[in-house]
Length: 212
Image (cartoon, rainbow, N blue to C red; front, side, top):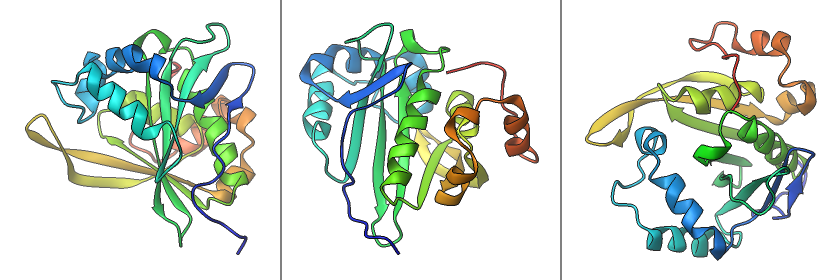
């Protein structure tokens, strides 16, 4: 087994579409606006009373690598503007497992933003000896599920009533991608219809023909 330790290097990541960087205090208003968006509130346990001070606290907590690595996302055609964030959270250092979590600012949705950002983070994770990246989303969270499927995550099952949101328990779907999956599927191929079909065969939710 290759040498592995957490945290893995926390570096800026970019391609021709998106750039990933550390959170900064100037993002506070945008983080707050994204957190109170109705879609974010629907699919996540973010408090209904979320405030700007909570956004500042989130930024201060995650602006440096700890048990979680959090990148802010910018679009190449709108540099400097916060477009969402993506996180890797350590699950097991011994097993080299991490959990991925992400959200997209409302203005940056349906542009392939998170699909591109997740590709970059997966490349970085597997290049630094992560073995398994897991992703969880509520059963009806089609946007997050679509991003996972477009990036070659494999649907592994449903964790029933495993998340409590807004007074109700919700089923959560579990996806994962392991290092050998990533080696078999170059990131630039993830959006091809043929590969989408192959990876969703037998899955209860098909990949939609739209982008997030």
